[in-house]
Image (cartoon, rainbow, N blue to C red; front, side, top):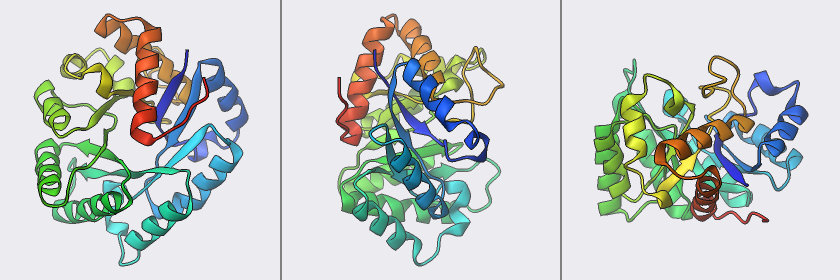
Length: 262
């Protein structure tokens, strides 16, 4: 059985002391590949060195997170573009998106998102999108971009929306990725959303070190725990873990153009 964790942040300080142990645990859990996301350009060199260290197991996504939108400068777009063009391990632009929870810079976040969607479109790469308290605005931006610039591919990551919102993004051609949130007892709407997503658009992730799934809730999250997310989704969708793992791995390979040895 093979799993792909489509969203990790193992460059964070909390992992610094035990990365080798982390690797042995994800391998033992059947995790064959990680997509390492990024929150700002200062991380580029660090995550590239992690890709050097975990050769063939780590691909990169680069971009500016909406909570860091204030760090966007006149050179940020060029930096993302140049890095993505020069490093073949960059398989996506992200994480980008909108986060309107406690935000007072919504218009600026939208501008930064649109700039990065244009970069992804120029590079013909998928986007990894973060969306919190902003589903309607995100839908409007993605619909407008697709109509005016051309179609986009990507994933709404760490999804926590309603079934109706889920359908919005599926209709736009996006994949939906579920994290440990889906295993939480109070995540009723999200669990209903799980049944809306067709098998060929489903992805799994940890978003580690955040949001560890049950039965590890409250602990530091790590890539090996993506298996708990997959187990929960398989049970909820009434399919075997093996078939869900195979399908989500196939989906990740298709979206991110990965070649995984079987």
